Length: 257
Image (cartoon, rainbow, N blue to C red; front, side, top):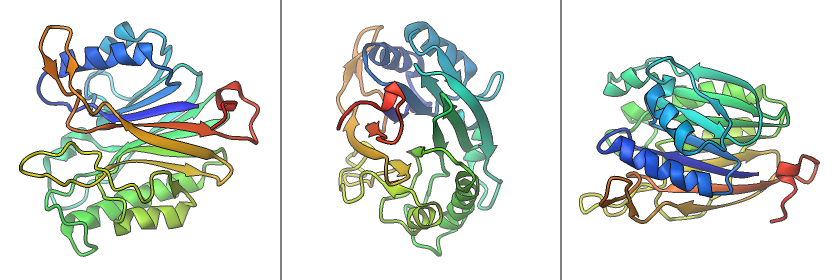
């Protein structure tokens, strides 16, 4: 199964960038696409128009998307739920996004968890930091829900923590997930002059051990927008993953790594 996770950035020239993204998705071979910061139902309708081969989709909310999350799939989605994170201190603008996790079953054989955790506005991921405490609560919600999933599972999204963070290590220990890009030092947030060496915030985590996976960064370069001009698709890079599950005879998992 080919999968993409991408924080699409809700600010700026959103519609033009989403149209350019949708055109690239339609030409791609991704089976499942997990997006964060799509924000509005009308943006989902735009993606449906530009990328019609993704016949199945999962999101919550009639006008504003809960968590800003959407999952697009060329494979049947046979179950979907949104699990909201609790509102914890410190107070932050992200309360309006109602952050959480979109949990989707793909054709009854695989579960995809698309999520977006609270940002750490102090850029300090030490355990005693005020935002680290909020993230621990969110990780605990994820761990509790993931523990009850009986199918193979992949957890993806903008977790807003570096690979070496205690919060991510705790989630891996509690759930048996493994970080596909463990040891990869490349950032997934686009470096800027003010932040030349950001960490990797976007992750791909899988379980069980029998699921083989390789992943890489995509959408790193500027693209031409439908209205003219060029732009980056987001302030994040995308992460693509190819998953192979030898114990499953579903055609989506029959590719060899």
